[in-house]
Amino acid sequence: MRGFQGLMTDLTLFMPAAGRSSRMRGTDKLMTEIDGVPLLRRQVLRAIDSEIPVVVTVPDLDHPRAKSLADLKATILAVPDFADGMTASFRRIYEAFGAISLMVALPDMPDIRTSDFHQLAESYNKAPEWIHRATAEDGTPGHPTVFPDWATQAFHTLKGDTGAKPILRAHPDRIKYHALDGKRALTDLDTPEAFAHWTCHRPEN
Image (cartoon, rainbow, N blue to C red; front, side, top):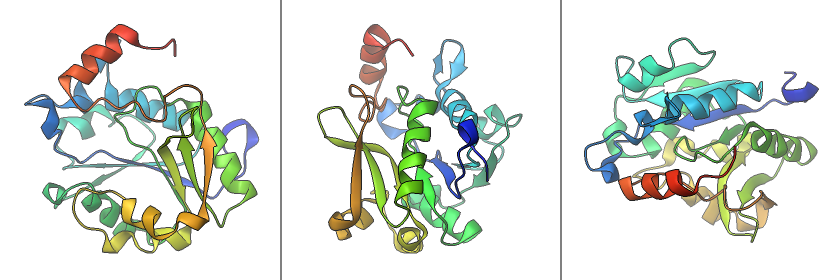
């Protein structure tokens, strides 16, 4: 598949967006608007611009999140057991596609850019047997993370709201880290306070 700026990659870009947004105290963080665009749609558009195939999980296909993406070139998967936590989305994508190489990008991280997806895809192409994880400029591990097909074989075993952390913990010697500028590999918008702080201090992107 020929992707961003002619990049050849077998990756799929996966955004797990079926969570309950419980820390937002009644507000759906992924539907909160930034410059008039829901956060989820904004980040999915950036993912689509990478020209890597995009898959997004949502609670159900009638959910406002799904409807906000209906006109976009992305595959939308419903997650019936979304209440089980984030790993329900990981199990769902495994159920739909099996063990494939995935770039996992969290949709509540507003500073992640299309160029970051491209950087990680290039790194994966050079060393496809490794897990590739983005870090902040100071080396603190963050997101996105690329999981080769040998790592996604374990997605169907994941439980709870831990995401793919058990896989990362099990294979520390098979991870390559890649620094992104500033703290954008760490910044997420989980709470109203985080949204307010980010809005006041947002970078130019």
